Length: 178
Image (spheres, rainbow, N blue to C red):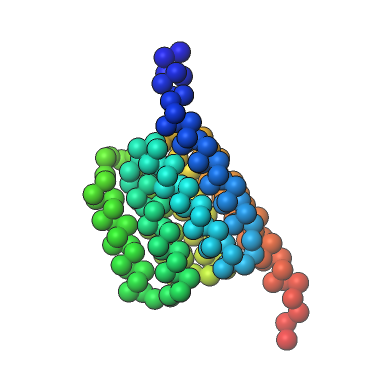
């Protein structure tokens, strides 16, 4: 019973509430077939994820989630720009180095690196496949942090991403070739 009472701290409850907000934003984002809408909504979701991870004292995940906000903005404007992508990858590694606490931080680092490559270098289905791989890493990171809502959010993001990939593929097969 002692474990359950400790988990019901105000910080824990706030972390769960913020993660549910992120869940709602991510579902709306990943259900969109438009890349631009997906990325704009993800900015707001990552604000919630950064706050959630800070409340759970998962500092690598919090820092990378905050950096993802900048990454999304830059990736929208400078898609395919290798130098900017490398700068974001290096910033991700720097955040991890400065806040590293152990092996539990590996999934958040992997998610940050995969997502950065996907957003800068890929579009459409290929981008969503890479973001699905990043979502899987975020599921693990959320589980390790103790985030119920975040774990559900990233699991649903993964599934929603797969469904959206199938929708895009179906729509492209329906279009007649010129």
